[in-house]
Image 1 (cartoon, rainbow, N blue to C red):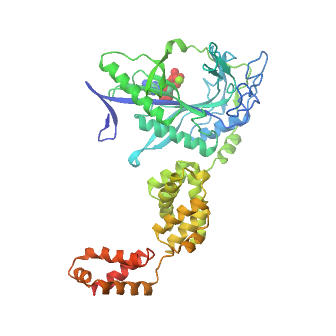
Image 2 (cartoon, rainbow, N blue to C red):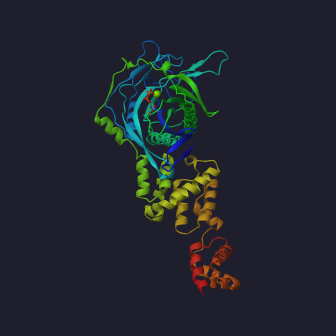
Amino acid sequence: MNKDMSNKYIIKGATGDWEIVVGLEIHAQVTSNAKLFSGASTEFGSEPNSNVSLVDAAFPGMLPVINGECVRQAVRTGLALGAEINKFSRFDRKNYFYADLPQGYQISQFAHPIVGEGEVVVELEGGITKTIGIERLHLEQDAGKSIHDQHPSFTLVDLNRSGVALMEIVSKPDMRSPEEAGAYLRKIRTLLRYIGSCDGNMEQGSMRADVNVSVRRSGEPFGTRCEIKNVNSVRFVMQAIDYEARRQVDILEDGGTIDQETRLFDPGKGETRSMRSKEEAHDYRYFPDPDLLPLEFDDAFIDEARESLPELPDAKLARFVGEWGLPAYNAATLVGEKESALWFEDLMGHLVKQTGKPAEAIASRASNWMLSDLFGHLNKVGKSLTDSPVSAEQGAKLLALVLDDTISGSAAKDVLDDMIETGRDPAVIVEEKGLKQVSDTGALEAMVDKIMEANPAQVAQFREGKTKVLGFFVGQVMKESRGQANPAVVNKILAEKLKG
Ligand code: ADP
Ligand code: MG
């Protein structure tokens, strides 16, 4: 597999090139204390069957009552996806039998979803962007969980998840490589986390994806797809697509055909395997749920939801690049997680206040410091921004010392190490360790004179045109000053004096 000149991702088969087509159905658990149609708790990790109301257990005669917060979160999410909000939507029953579905049907939205078409822009390698279409977003309840490994002869059922509110976000078949699918999934997760409608925690199952994959020869109509169910990490989604596409190409190259089927990804083996063919599972006999009124709301409700949205990552990215002059890569990395974007803004706020310099003059350096120094040092001690021992305010104090030449960039790394270890103030550390940079021209000039006197041969070499010995002199001054000379000032003095 490789990329051709137009950055297209292709699979080379014996008889020619194949293109991958991918569409994702993402299930995202709505952040809410209560379930979609009952007041039972949604807390993760509770005792099995402890968060189950009579509605969730489908006792006879129980009636679902819609949780307004889940509706609001779905609308906010739709707005964040740049999607059309449907003022009229309706719940349908999706009928099927399974032990972990006591109602015998799932309440979902089929013909009239709450959110219609939208689109998201994803950032790919090399600064390329691509727009991926959203088909729809609808609300539905989760099912319970069958547990097969707790009893020698029985399957146990935990209904804690039964009735938990999910948003299903369906993409158009717009992705053409594992990378694009990974970038799309990450972008959706970032958006959900920014607006707080889902915690995006894939390990805990708050977000998972059904991955639809087909292959075709370039320019031909879409091929038959297979759907890989419930993949729960970005990496697994990418691996599953890669494996599945190769499997399909092998079949087609051998003259076979693809059966439309549901498959499972086995992360241990890195393979997909058949679960059931589509025909067996398809007749859900959808019909409007007679227990629930349609959802109807007005512009005021939508406007309120829109006003509750924070600045979204795309807008932040544009502002960081356009107004603050950040390199695109730095900006994209910082806005990728809400925490890092907010931390950076906090850092900039303090830095502008402390240095009196305009943001655009210092933002780029501040972003480099945060991404390489701060993240690097935190990484070393196994911490992240959320449990960083260094606050944005302390970070700004340290950076301010570098920006006004009080300490050198390399001294700042030592200070940061100390700050991470001890949580002390940078000024205190600089004082205690004597790290202040010597920028005093008089003192440095005297040092340079002394060194030139002691090394007449090198001075002569320089004057004969071997300007490389400049490095030797810089090294000597740094040694003499025990690393505290300001290198910019030293270079300037040396250039002057060595000319003769
Ligand atoms: P269903 O409801 O049967 O699952 P949909 O038409 O809603 O079918 O499609 C589900 C998902 O499959 C969507 O994300 C869509 O983009 C994707 N999809 C549809 N056709 C293809 C195809 N030929 N190859 C890959 N993905 C596809
Ligand atoms: Mg589907």
